[in-house]
Length: 618
Image 1 (cartoon, rainbow, N blue to C red):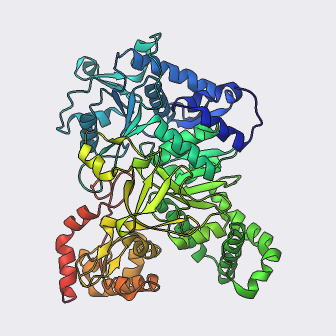
Image 2 (cartoon, rainbow, N blue to C red):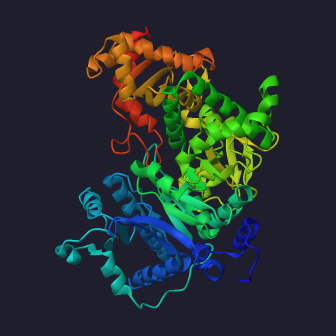
Image 3 (cartoon, rainbow, N blue to C red):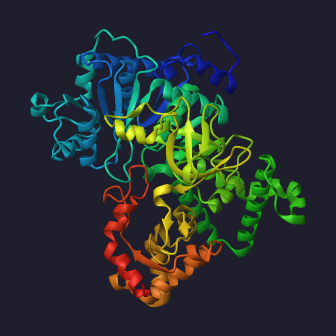
């Protein structure tokens, strides 16, 4: 490739020539082959290691040869059940380069769900890091007739498993047996690049068929709104089985020749972020909300003067953000002082907080997706100089549909649609989109495909939206999740739950009220805050009866009313159910992408909810 000026625009332009996803790695070799590509913590070596693009390509070639030695047919499915890692990238690039189809499994999903996806996809190969993960799948009771080989990357494999069916072998054996095997012809743009199973908040997950061109078109369009700088470093902690992380951090970051640092785990998130000092990061609202909550909890311990300075810094910083992004600026006469105090307040407050994101923080862009970000959280982080932008998408669209543009960020929207996306509102203000990023269809489900994509090619998102005159899109909530009370009032739960979730007592919340006379809230309490509340009410925090006590419910309801004071009266919860039992992926009440499985929660707590309304005289 001809030498060109190393700018963001030039790097983005170079991706226009690519036709398949493996080229996102190989096109970097001529000019950036010796630049850092990926970094991870090696548990075996007890240190951080990194690979250049050239070293990564050499490692991928070994994986390609190993897959080629299996004599699979073009398009055959190969599944991966691994945490974010260099091996995960090698798997994906090896499978894609050999014109096979990767099936990413959720690393924290249940064995039964993983087994279902393996069976439904007809996967021939499974690569996973832990032998126990395979053992859980094998004993789940799901028949896997198509599975021929299981590769374990990190653990030893019992000798007898190498002769079993399917055969189970360690990674070293897999790579050694394939060494020197001639490589098959490369993929084409229309070939499947992934079979990604939706999280399945209701019913069985469906396999979304995405082609190389589907994803590449999404990558190129995202770069029209958010184009990372040549020196930027990405921080990856959302699972690569999540299409949001897969397309953005992995494909966009790698395609732009940026380094990608893999977080060890959520438990080490803060520590790893310090070491990485990332410029770009994909996140979900819960992560940013937890960061903000920690900031506010620390603030509470400060003297009153320090607290006033903090809030002043946020106010000034947010007004500066509004000026930079051409938004209305509130603040009255005091805002005239902003140019004179901005520098002092940023040094005193903003720069101190930003150091939580790295030793040398330089936040270019942190993206929030998957659900709406709480406006109060957004305002605080933006005011402190942490550039948070919201985006929106769905797996069926490869996945990004809309994202805010740098220099024109509106924290109340998910930004305008990408330049290659047509967007309009359908019946009931449902957002419909059309363009080259729309999936090929659902795997083996033609009726579901026809329901999702109409004859004119419009993908029905299932989300209620509003499109402003300038093209900005505001998502109001899922059509199926909007609560309709018995009096006919329609209440989107997301905004309510965000407001309630700002209370430090609330770890998780779900509002209910479908066909009921009023709204109530189900709250999973923060243990420490619950102890404080019980102490003030002379209750035993460990006694189950305390959660049902009238005093505790009234106290929490009062706090909820304060948090939702700006909502219409019919949308404010009048009572609350309290519990210490969290909703998790493991107990089946959350999806692997951290969305609540509302129907399952409602079914699990049906008796308790009925009792709650009965006490209120329903």
